[in-house]
Length: 315
Length: 315
Image (cartoon, rainbow over all chains, first blue to last red; front, side, top):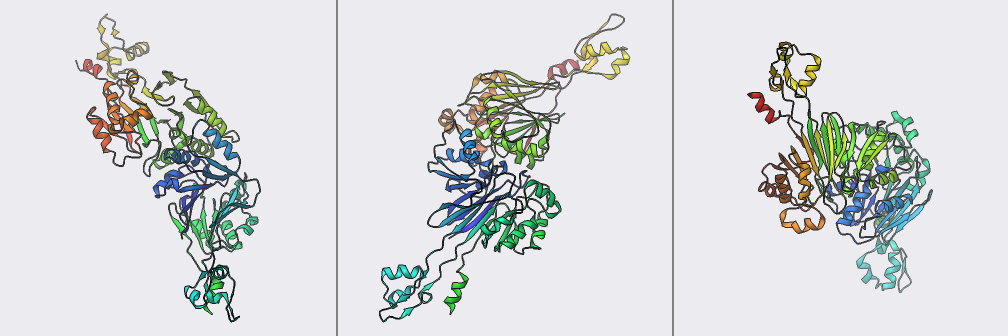
């Protein structure tokens, strides 16, 4: 039951000799969601041993080239690899025009299913049995979207021995798994906490691509396990950050603190910085659990039982 | 007086974890000419310590994505780096439409001067005091162009001591440098070979991008110092090569032999090959001075005095 993010690119618009433009890969139980696709994303995916054909959903935050120029090559390669399954792309509607133009004389061999994101839309983009993906507006020079990937709450786990002990039927079991108490033949109420152990807590990852400091996003990302927030500059260049619609490491940490997230990942570093430790140092003054992303590294969110339920369970 | 080629990408359409799509950088006396620009070219340029802003001319062989998808990112980066000088692009006219579409809402801050190459055109694309760049048609699934970069013949070098010895005037010197003999005051003919040493022999590099086996190109590349010729497959897959408009290593070597070139570089390897030594082994059976390209390696063509003139000079 993996829930992890691998960072494929950590540079801002100008890549460096060692840092690629933005792309993250979310692995939700061996389903792969690509988030942004800067130039060279397919090369990074191969370098870090991911299979391109496993990606079925791509989310593009905004239409600055360093966040989508890798799509052309990736889609071409998927075609060469013989893909036939639909590929779903969630992005501003202009991207559909761009891809249609680029591939107008080229039969990819598979269908691009385009899901346009309307300006200022906040809400669900994708949902299935296991996962919900939502979006919310960031604050950048052009329309830019943040994304939240959130596991769904699973049913409680029934303690096996209880089935025989209380002679539970299938209907009883389904109700108990959804949290109901049980009344036995003698009319005694058996509290749910005696019959079940809590399911794992749903895990969540928020991706805040290019954005100026924007407290308006806090309500959308509140309490996530892992927050990626851009930090193109350090506080010494806060004016430059404001002018260009970007954030400093300190500002990213302030957002993380306000949103009470568990952990903060910093990325999208300006090419002018050789030593990135300054970003971490600046952030941890505000929010202790801050880390600078490392290309190729996978950030795993561990499974945890819900704390509150755990407490009941222990009693 | 450098004349060298650095190979930035050696893979065919599907890049691998260690091989980028096609791009070569020609350094002609510290002027830099980019030939093809696959995805990730700007990243490779930075990795190998080339300054992006030094490139003023880009030649694109054909409009398959693995030969031009890197242009979007490269042009964006040049813009971010503050380029103001014109950038010259030589390619099929469709590329102009593609770039205009991509950058229609984006002011690069410098001018793209587009030089369209007509279908089946063979001739000079670019010429200045030092260099001539020509093109010729290759044989591929779509219009595809080869390029030849050729230094111009320099004037002969006058032996300094002769100026005083024969009391040469400026007009005499100019004529002698261009190869004329000299008649002194006593009416004696002094042969040019006594007055000069030959200039260096003009060096040449031919780039044969995606092409099927095509003896029709031999006349265009005859006698070049360095020939790059694609070899996507080995002879075991000659049928596949024919179907896809590509060449095998043996076929590339046959072209090199027919064209009597000095050295052959093989590249554009299909992703299916892990060990590339098979390409070299196959080629050297036909043409001994064959080498497989190595990304990041620079292939220098050394300065040489013209052999024939040297002979005269020694007499």
